[in-house]
Amino acid sequence: MTTQPARAEHSGPESAPVLDVSPFKPSLVKAVFRDVTSMHVSRSAAWAAASVTRTVLTEIIDGARRAAAEEARKKLIPGDLLSAIDRNVELEVGNKWYDHSPTFQGLTGVLYDAEGVIVPSRKRSQSRKLSAVVGAHRFEAGVKKLLRSQGATAVPAMVRDLDGIASVFLTDLARDAAMVVREGGTKRFGTVTLEMPGEPAPPPLLKDSLRAPSNRRRDGRTIGRDDILAATTIQLFGGNLRQRALTEAREATQNTSAG
Image 1 (cartoon, helix red, strand yellow):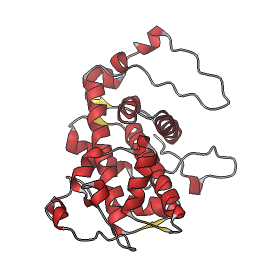
Image 2 (cartoon, one colour):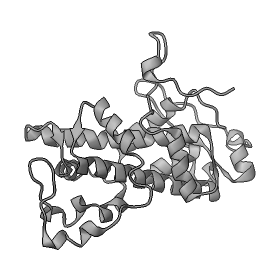
Image 3 (cartoon, rainbow, N blue to C red):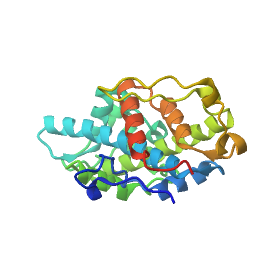
Image 4 (cartoon, one colour):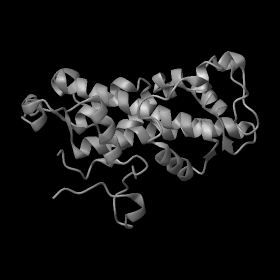
């Protein structure tokens, strides 16, 4: 039998700390992947993708909180999202959502009132009619849970943006993971080596181990954890956020099987 990653709230005092990726359930992750590819998604791959998405959203929320604090506000508004991205280019992910959100239409031309509601504008009347990207809004519950875990609250427009960014980011991650499998997996993209602070670097893999057979390499139809990690390096270009996402994904999947 396989075991799911231990969750922080159920860990005993002697348990190794493992991140709780529950805001974005593996079942929801797999639903997103089904929209993109017919490939099978392993249990560990689903947990890894959920963890990476959580890491990205957590960093965005943290940046927005700092922007709001500078204005002595506790509730996050879309303007805080723009400030977070402006200050940290690593947070610029899920770009396709930008075309569907009033927050990013014209950028400097978007105005909000004290409650984070967009001030009407004739120039934005057409852009506001754009429908959300396919699959958006299914992450709303996870976004709200993540906000609560960070001690933050947000206006509906901000929740909608975080929801949309999460959906687009995970969809892009799924596409890249499928591409990694189709184009040779680790044989082409290389393995992902994770180094923990204060620990010696792991020894290099032997050539024979890179050629070791796996279900994914045999059938070419299964997305595994390493494929998600490879896709993460494609999606996240910033060194700090990328390394944090890879490390936390590894921790979140250390108790799962590859199946």
